[in-house]
Length: 247
Image (cartoon, rainbow, N blue to C red; front, top):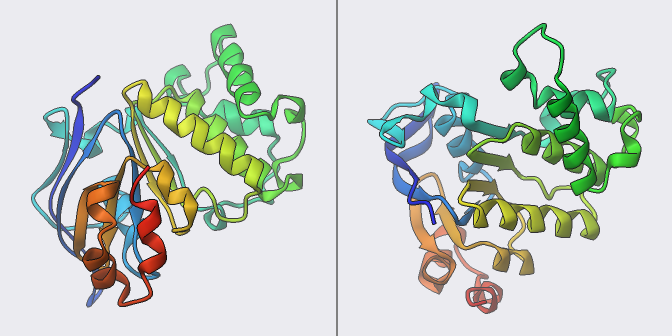
């Protein structure tokens, strides 16, 4: 199994005078499905965006394979929250997935036969191959999320980042997404997921990052989902988490 990892050193984020994240230091391992959890306003999405250089931050460094992560964006696939996507944009399912091949193909160049084959393979993988001509705005929330998952797979990335991919999706889609996440992790990829739901789905994660503006705990699920950590992050009513701490 690959030993690749992302190392975050003393990361902090301010929105003007508001401190969104404070002194975050941690490591994210390849070959593990890693969830970022915490209460509303804890800085979960902020951490992911700061790591990818999408918002300004201060701190020492964010390193992957001995190089700054922001210098390696070509190997990163990022799927933002659905609320940040313009679903009225006139694009079909096929158009969206082919966007995942642009970086490998080059701008204004014709897509190769290989790229088209990969696009159809990933659409089939997420169960959306029969929707390739459908406008993206006409799909359900779960279908839209599966299409953007397919786009990320088409990128053939080493690092996959998903911001709340399970919001507004059906149970079938959730199962498909988790199955693919596990496949990616098992193949040695880094898979990072901002996750809002702390029900039984939390048992799908190998490692967790627990935040509340600062780092409460990180590591394997059993270590992070300890009552004292959850109480520190959520301030009470944490007993129902305990049964998901073990497989």
